[in-house]
Length: 426
Image (tube, rainbow, N blue to C red):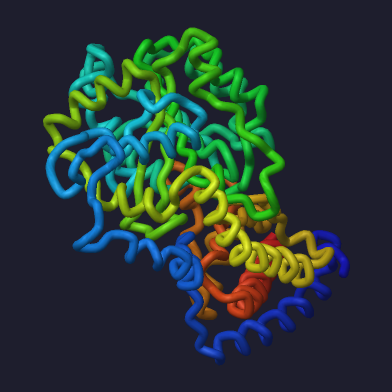
């Protein structure tokens, strides 16, 4: 196939006619394929059904330290859950807090507390002026929604193949005291699948922030969600921060939302002991304690880090053919047209599709008309402003392989149509 940009006007019109006919055929099928969010499939949810049977009315419902999990007590997680998360993060148990079911809630709470009360005795962010966050982009839309909720200025930072553009990060963090935070999904990032390199982890750890209350929100949402084996280990940012003399600079988050049951999982964070103590002091006012029965249920089902890895291998067996189907179908559909490029992640939950510049919104609009629901164009950028109008997040987890193949045929048809429309408009 001749690349679209090299076609004559007559060739483009002919190609558009063929694509329009195919598009109408898809519309006639009245499909309803929803790929807007990265939710686990029913088959994945079935992997954790046995967890519902590990606790019963006649079971021992005490944690390993003797605490009755039916009652009050233990605000930062039962010991066995803290140990699992400590092993996972490669930190000590006293650097861990196990919370409720949502790591996003923990992030929200941390920012809310910083805005209203400050961090470690510092001035509340809300009293310091209009504070700012660095937002590696394309990135996670829910991160951006939190910062926008608190009216924090968001500064896009390009997400490169080895992580955020560190020259830009250093420039902002080390020169502007109103830059208070930075988001990052460091492994199999949402949506690009990038893993931050060791060099960039060390550069982050060695930042010299102009603001003493600057924090990195390190969302490890996918760092054990491998598809093809773990051949890209992620350097421990908390350990590197301690080496660099910045022990309080990072909060690392994690949850089992896509491992057991979304909405009924466990969330946790790892940070310095000083940060942990400050957060526990806030939590003691905020709550009597999180759901220890759910923590106990998870631990008796998962057991330990090896049990967690076994569970993740089962997820990978289900997800791998879906990601392969996306790549195979897009490769076959786009050919040499030059109408799109896409990521080939080794883990995580998303494929990042870049259509021709200026065509993402039109592509998503056309897909909606053909029965495929995608994440809105622009959602992977702060304020939903993709400066190139090209990025679309693909979430392959929920549909079946056959549904994915059909959906990707439609996405490719729509992206090619949008590209030809744009070229003809010139």
